[in-house]
Structure formats: C-alpha cells, structure tokens
Image 1 (cartoon, rainbow over the protein chains, first blue to last red):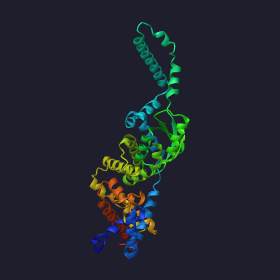
Image 2 (cartoon, rainbow over the protein chains, first blue to last red):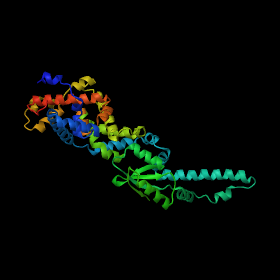
Image 3 (spheres, chains in turn blue, brown):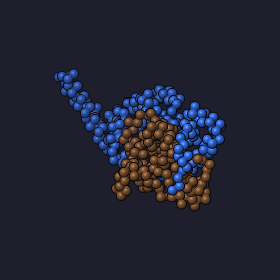
Image 4 (spheres, one colour):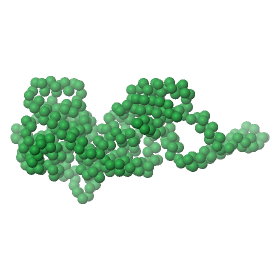
Length: 231
Length: 166
C-alpha cells in the first residue's frame, strides 16, 4: 500500500478547506459560501484542491446514478406490510382521519350492517326518550313508522356530508408544513388521487360559496400549488 | 405514502445499496424504511427535511441488517475496516480513464468514508444534516470528509492518477 507523504499526513486542514466539499455541492449558507469564494480567489493551492473536489463531486454523482432503481417488488412488499397492520397506522392519525380511515376500510356489506345497527340504536333511543316524555302514550308505533333503514342512512349522509377538496402541495412542503396547514383548515387527508393530488375532507359541511372562498384562501397558502373542490 | 415513496425511494435505495452492497437486501431495506415512516409519521417533528429523516432511518436499518448477517459475523469495527475488493489499486491502475479510476476508488473507501462522501456529494446534505443522519458532531463531519478525501487521494495515487492535490 502506498502511503501518503509525511507532510500530507501531518497537514491540518483550515476551516475554509474543510468547507470546500459543501461549496462544490452548493449546500453552504450565503456567508460561508462568500468566505470560501474569497479564499479561492486568493489562494491558488486551495483552488487546485477545489478543482480536485469538483472531480470527486461529479464522479460520486455518476457512480450513484449508475446504481439503478429498485424493482416493483419493494413497493409491493411495502404495501402488503402496510395492509397487514391498518390498526397501528390509524392510531397515529388525528381523530377525524382515524374515523375516515376506519369507515373507508369497511367493506360495503359491513358498512350496510353498521348503518342498520345504527338505525336500530337510534330507534331504541327515540323510543326511550319518547317513553319518558309522553309517559302514558305508547311510542313505538309512531316512531317505527319512520324507521326504514335505508332512508335514515341516506338522510344522515346528505345532512352532514363534509366538504371535500383535491389539493396539490408544493414540492418543498414538509410533513410538518402539511400537518400544520391541515390543522389550520380542520381538514384531513383521506386519500391520494392522480398527479400528486391529495383528497382532503373538511370537518364540516359547507355551502358551495363557503367552500369556494375557503379553497381560494387555501390556494394562496405558501405550500399549496392547487386547491379545487372535489365531488 | 405513494407520493412520498415515489419522490424518495430511488435515493433511499441507492443510499442503502451503498451501505449493504446487495440489491436484494437494499430492496428489503427500503420496504422496511417506508413501513417505519408509515408507523411513525406522527413522530416526525419537522425539524429536518423529510429526506434527511428518511436517510437517517435507512442508515439505522442498514447497519442493523449488516449486524444480522450471520454469515459475516463481524462487529462494527471490523466491518468498517473492510474495504471493497474493487479498491485494489492494481485494478484501478489499469483504468485509463481518470473518472473511471475515481469511481473505482470511491467504491473502495471504507463504509464510514463512503457514507459521508455520498451524503455530501450525492444527497447534497449540509454539515448539520449529515451530523443528524450519522449521529456525530458537526466538526467530526467536516474532518471525517477531509480524511475520506485524503484516503481517496491515496488510492488514486496508488492507481497512478495525479490530480494536483494534495
């Protein structure tokens, strides 16, 4: 193994010298970048070293780019693993998102059964309240006459359906930025659509005008590229 | 998750591959990394870029995977001391092209040196971000890269490539 010269091994790098690789990569702050530029203009030895660093920088990129990309197997494995543990994933979401995730995860048949059970529970509750208020009257007949399962489900859906939107965030938006934005608009991500769009659901139902005004405001947010109403 | 995966999985894979040096293992690694992200999304504090967070998880997972390799059965220190077989100066010396020789020598660096070179040059991480990913002080980040570059120069010199530095 050929060794470096003693002089080189003993060489203690200056602070500017240590920063040269980050200058080549363009990741120094403005102040340090200016200091390095000044030093490079003054010191030919440093400039020579910087030229060598530029070569290392280019070849490192070349080397990494030649490594290729993973196969689709990795993505399939990931989503199989995620599918295997929906409960744990949902626990970290806000309540509204957890509720949305829960219902989204139910099969249509389970959902229909749940709706029927909910309707029965409502009827029982109405019966008890009616009995308390009216005391002497029988309550079941009148209440039961309103109680087919399907209309109740449809009516509940129509009256409280929260508003939805499709939103595209800017590439520089970080998870924390998106989370803060969602909190400020009381919205949750309930899915993703094509083209990098996310499907959002707001915590309340809004009229068309209210939703348009809110989306217009959202559209002006720093981390939002596009916000449009979703069906 | 699909958007996050789509945006970052190639770089995570390449970083992992350079650490574990096995394509199959690197693919397993990215599944584990993104599954961890899925599980821990609520714990992400947003103090660093998502890519920095992902690379830190990748590094941790890669080192764990390396430790699990029973057929190797090495501790960290011994693993770090190993250099790639392709770092042999005799191989690199045959390279006519300086760029190719440089790439050979980059591959031949020790895991610690290879990692820091990749993080700074390819993943474009700042001193602070590298310190966060690797878990070392910022001054150590700077000196480690300096000595990685010195080692690279030594390998190049052995391969007969003169660059004018040092």
